[in-house]
Every structure is written in C-alpha cells, then in structure tokens.
Length: 352
Ligand code: UD1
Image (cartoon, rainbow, N blue to C red; front, side, top):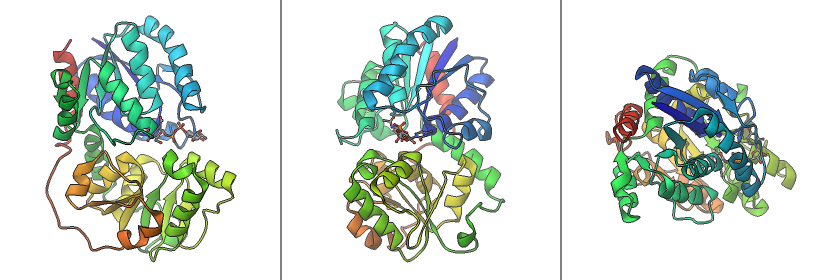
C-alpha cells in the first residue's frame, strides 16, 4: 500500500511525524508532499529536523498568497504529483489550505482520501479553517476523528458511516516529546530566566488583520502583571509592522517561534498560555497548564468543559480572565492515550 501525505503548515508537520513513523513500522510506502504554504525555516524545516521526519519527496513551493491563489496554486500542481506517485490513499491533515487542496485534487482523480482530525467545528463561518474542515470531511472517504465529540458532529452531518475515532495524534507526539525535554532547561530570553512568565501566540486572521482589535490585544497583553513571552508568527509580525503596532511594549516580550520541543518545554515552565492556536490549547491542557483562548469559540471544547481553558473574545477583558484561580485537577483523557497514529493507519488499512 502506498499513502501520500499532503502537508504544508506548521501543525501538519507535528501530525505527520507519528503517522510517518507508524507507516514505516508497518512497511507502508509513504510519500510526503510539502505544498510550501509555510516556508520559513522556523515554521517548517525545524519541525522536520526535530521530529525526525524524512525530507519531502515533492515540494510544491507555493508560498504565501490570498486564499484562492494559494489554494489554486496547490491544486494546479497536485494532478501531476498524483499521476507520478499514483497512491492508494491521499492523507490530509487538519484544516489548512493545504488540507482542502490535497483532498480536492485526490478525490477528482478517484484516489481515496483519508482526513486526519476530522469532525472539528468552530461554527464560525468567517474562519477559513472552518470551510476547509467542512469541505474536506465531506469529500473524504475516511474521516479519522480525534474525539467522540468529533464523531457526534460527523454523525449529525451524515458522515458516521465513513468515520473511525482514533484519538488525537498530537497527543502521541506530545507524550513522546514531553519525556525527552522534561529534564532540560527551558530556552528563554534573558529577562525571563528564573522568572514567572506566560506563553502567548496569536496568528488567526480574526485577531491579526483588524488593526483596532490587534492594537487592543497587544495592549492587553502588555499590561498583564506577569511577563508574556509572545512567540510571534510571521503573520503577526507582518500585520503589526503594517499597522505600526509595537510588540515590544510593557510586560510583553516578543520572540521568534520556537522549535516544537522547546515550545513544549517553555509551556511546561510557564504559569499559563494565551493563544488563538488550536494545537496549543490542547497541548496546554495535556501539560495541565491553564490556557486562555483569545477567540469567541473553540473546536477543542473538552478543554473548556474541564476548566483548563477559558475563552476571552474581548481583549479588553483579557486580564481578569487570565488572572483567575487554577482549575481543579483532572485525569480526564478526552484526546486519547497517545496511540492514535497506530489506530489511524490501521483504519486506513482496514478500509483498503
Ligand atoms: C495557517 C492555517 C491555519 C494554521 C496555521 C498554523 C490556513 C487557512 N490557515 O495559517 O489553519 O493554524 O497555518 O501556523 O491554511 N508567513 C511567512 N512565513 C511562513 C509562513 C507564513 O512569512 O513560513 C506569513 C506570510 O506573510 C503569510 C502569512 O504568514 O501571508 C499567513 O500564512 P498562511 O499560510 O496564509 O496562514 P497562517 O496564518 O500561517
């Protein structure tokens, strides 16, 4: 069996790592196609290096553009790649433009599509990720769901017959990386060493692309009691510079994105996480670090129900939500046991 993975953005490299490893163990031929949606060394190459992922077989080098142009550039290049490799399955991950492009190009060539992390919904139709998820789930032949809630959503959309709950593969990676970094020192900018701090990331268009909202968000972070290490995504840097918003202000300490193991270590050492990332909300929960999500909704509702994640839609109320008592301890494991990749590969093999 030959499986072709289409990846392009940072969280997909994290999900690709355990899937690739299990495919190798099972003797499955694995072809990796990198769309080039993320291309900076810190957003792409370091993930391949640190997570032991082989070099991509094909790199489409599409780069940044508007949604239609970026997605279209991937579609235009995928036919030839699929003809060249003729895989049994195309495997797509998560909710990015690379996900929808990989799924659409494969389904139109009658190649079976498996969607990993299927069934997540924010119910916010302004999010590009929401369109990507819905379309990908509906064209996929096999929906690999991370949770029972994702299964319930897919059932509500009539997709239960094509769905298998496998658990969350990001949990697989986190368990492994946690054990390798637990005894190391966190890599932190000088002013934070030995001090209490929080970790923040901001990259969603809803937060970065409106100058008034971004200005209020940065001001709220800068006014917090405890310093915030802001791991600045290129989109955030570009928009802040364009709007004339200074990130190095008050208690805010901007820095470049961290490689995955260092990110995990930094979160472990922190008092809390402030983010609009999907993956980081879950990682904070798995590491039992309180998270505040600067969005009106989340796809990972289990983290909220268990008290470890609080939504903060309005930047003006951020401080009062962040400076809250710690949640009750829990041993709940809604994201599985760290063996999701094995189940996902088994499910693909069983449907072949
Ligand atoms: C994308 C995904 C999002 C995912 C996120 C993880 C979509 C619609 N969104 O958002 O689901 O959570 O990746 O990071 O697919 N840029 C660089 N260097 C890079 C990558 C991006 O400078 O290596 C800049 C460019 O200015 C680009 C902007 O970041 O225009 C946004 O990149 P893009 O790929 O459009 O989306 P993300 O915001 O990263």
